[in-house]
Length: 382
Ligand code: HEM
Image 1 (cartoon, helix red, strand yellow):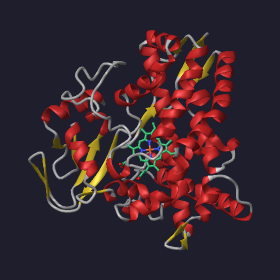
Image 2 (cartoon, protein in one colour):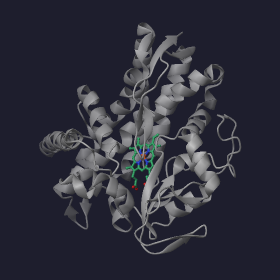
Image 3 (cartoon, rainbow, N blue to C red):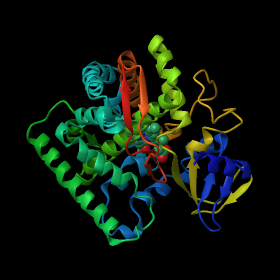
Image 4 (cartoon, rainbow, N blue to C red):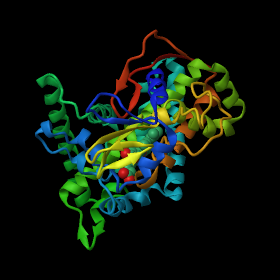
């Protein structure tokens, strides 16, 4: 997609791909401007992907704070920010390291593994399982569920099969989360679900639908994104084996490596907004109701700030990245997923000397919003 995005970036900062269709924001300054102006550019745009008119069923995810505008957005967001404080993260980190070590050892024993299945998926799935208090043996299902949800692009599926799959997934997720809520009601634990059950907004407990929306949001936002980040780190190692050795020698470079991976191959490719009124952006007139697709992947290679953007450069400087968004909806899990990636790579590079891709062809999850490899068959060298 990067060559195509570069071509669109040359056409201008705000371009309409198809006549009458949505607008694409291709450059950094304009992307940042849209994301910080929630009153002009509403997250109702993104909501259309999760609750398109043809779905004929309520999708609880679509009523989560990700898709709401201020001020309602902020009131809901405040209820879960406690789970992401530095103290909470430090506790998770200590617990996570042991789990990561076991996965690294397991990969080294097997030598030939699917990196997604053996490493990139179980790490974030374990963390989300802890945060929400979910059954670890169901990780494959969590992945399947979030996958269906993030690939809902707001485009009506062609066959009845896909539509049926979406409905079945939403049913399954609701049934499972209902069980989790029931369990926590009778036996509260130290997890986010119990916190949410205790939470009050203006003295009133959250409704069933609000609780469900939180669970959908946290699982979906916290899983697929971080899986893709870890998979993309592995892809950088395939392309630049020398970088793995550099990180092995100097693990303090790992956070930089993670940031550059997030720029080079962002897990969240874009986000969508809806113009609440007629607005002029970079000289382009956008009518009220226009859909604006903010390409985070394109902004991350904007020549103005990221020269030679198609190259992975560990020492790269530049303005704050937009990989985790910007403004009111800035990712709540940014520090968490950075921590997960850092711990994962610290343990990986301390034991593994080289990772080689063992396929000519990678299948991609392609959605309007996220992108990542479905599987990555690798050989592990110690
Ligand atoms: C929002 C990216 C991991 C929870 C966002 C947004 C982006 C993003 C771009 C803003 C979307 C928008 O403005 O429309 C990422 C990336 C991740 C990641 C690239 C990993 C590499 C996580 C994790 C969690 C999480 C691990 C939670 C455990 C959230 C939540 C929001 C959000 C709750 C909504 C915030 C709001 O609407 O105020 N994320 N995310 N994310 N993310 Fe993440």
